[in-house]
Amino acid sequence: MKHHRLIGWPAFLLLLLIGSCSRSTVPPSASDGLYGLVNSRFRMSQGGDSLGFSAISILSTPDHIYLHEESVVPGFSEEMHVYADRDMVLDSVRITGSVQGQTIDCFTHHNSNRLQGHSTFPFMLEEDRRLIDTLAEQPFYERALSLFLLPMNLDYSQATQTYVQFNSVDGGLRKIQASFQPDSTVTVPAGTFDCFHLQLSGGVATQNLFIAKSERRIVKITFEETPWQYELLK
Image (tube, rainbow, N blue to C red; front, side, top):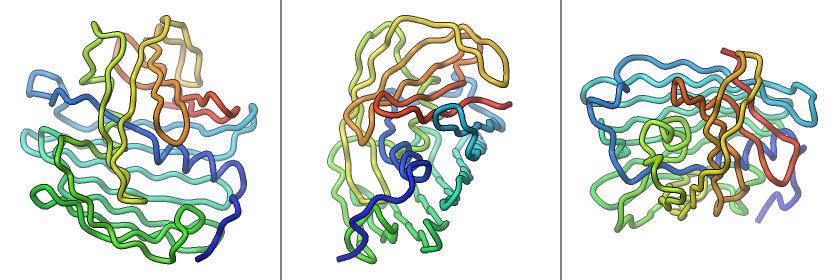
């Protein structure tokens, strides 16, 4: 047993984001416009104070999707690599980095209906190293892909939708409810956008995603319980 205390708020809230995302059960198709390379860079702040950044790159080909994420705030650095097929069926996910000088090392491979691997994530897990062996009997989607490709796949005619996401940190499968809130206009460093407002609940924290109508791209993320937020820089 180890590490029952919380790490500093900035890094802890980033971990809340890491553990609470979902995507639609409707797979994308060639007509969805996902081909090519998408880059987004977010400013991460708490109570108005800029604390770090998160850079997201998604490369999509006719057969595969690859996501790379790098996030840095004081006391926390994380790099994620996610590989999936065109329908977002997970092949593998790896997370490396450090929390307050301690090593993060997570890897999961999806084979048939099993998710197998290991996870070392200080302050998030009680054990030093957790073996992952999760039976997936229903469709699921990896959390980072679900967050950053969710706007491309949701049915905007349905006010509330429920999805299943896989968290490679603890090996768990969770149901997330996505519900549309009233539209809003949002100003971030990248500009001012007319946005859909999507709320995700059922995970570690309730999140509000503001999605630009013109691009179906996330421009801002906030949390119900804290003043932590992501804002699109470019």
